[in-house]
Length: 331
Image (cartoon, rainbow, N blue to C red; front, side):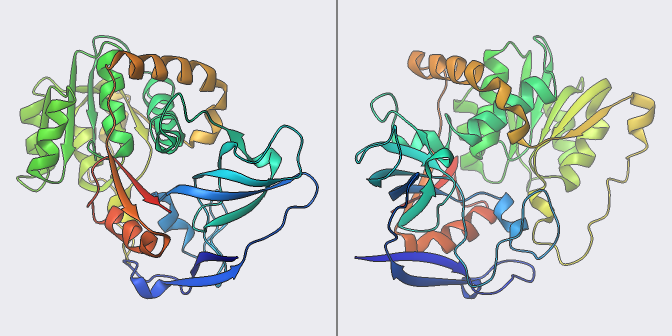
């Protein structure tokens, strides 16, 4: 039985193109002791993957040329040589970008498809949801009564950040997005104000949406959004720096925020974070998020592309902002 994988054919210079990827046919692997073979059902494409396409040192190794990419996936076990796993089990793991994955059982986590659709374990109940939850509540330390600003707020993480802020008692939640349709969706999700960052300079739009300033900024964009947030943050404000998609495809070093000196006088905290450092919150996260989902108080959006061969285009579309909520590929 053939297996197909997406390999990195070349390293992008600036924006990725279809030519940077290659669809490769291989044999379905067999499991050794302690291993599983999983038929992937759905996989995730995420902005951080762009950084891994560069041959630079980072917090995770770069993708190798002429080898399959990897990332979050959920699939069905088809062969098990590991205690505690049987064919038919559904598991979440980190070997996406392929139809069949061979992995150590220690790297698989069982999920229950009767409690939530399998896609949810890559979004609201997976790394995406955990990033939003930990970043807002632990990293930024949002407190009830505060004003929160979220960039890329119609994306997978940002849309959850805004809803969690509202559910945890924020006084006002403001989001930026890249189209009128996305702005309308943010209002449907309970954001108090939202704006299209194409309509005017971000600092002007943010000042109109939050005239009294903000206490917390959740940054998915960097660039002009970070600069605007620094200007709008009140004394002792906090920013959780999750991502900076505005500069992922830059070919020249981006300029820093021109108002960075305001961090001193306002005594601001700008804190970067990696979600893997917050596993101690998982039980609390699952309990609270699943409760909100059951009650219908938390909603999530997905953009689903069909077929492994379309995964590169789905990834490129994600970087262009073509998704609403989580971008997934159904295999």
